[in-house]
Length: 131
Figure 1 (cartoon, rainbow, N blue to C red):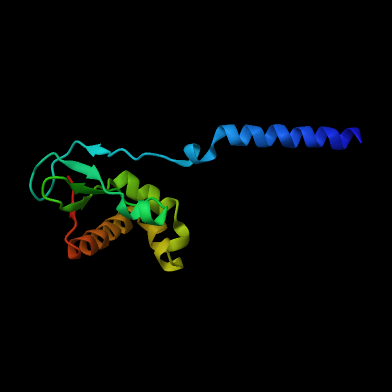
Figure 2 (cartoon, rainbow, N blue to C red; figure 1 turned 90 degrees about the vertical axis):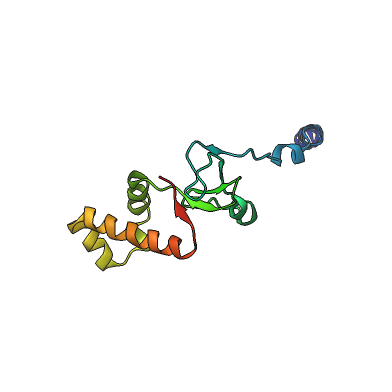
């Protein structure tokens, strides 16, 4: 009987704690724009902000940092060689065996080819690279 009383007391204290904590306030996170101190590749203004609309709706952050110019509303991306290499090294499951062989035999050529694909794909969507 003593154990039941203790469990009842623990439950009562736990419920009170949760009521006072108000978990809805803990879940709420206000997003603040991330500014990027580079020029927009389209209009040249330093009005770039991190583009997160897709992140807000899907819940998953974008793999490639995307930006939007607050002046002309053009989308752009920023991708360094080091970050691309990081993405490749940490996502090898996305590549075929042949591609992995090419990567291991001539990493520099593989990365240049991959950058070329990325540039063409984003250019076709009118998304320019930030320099």
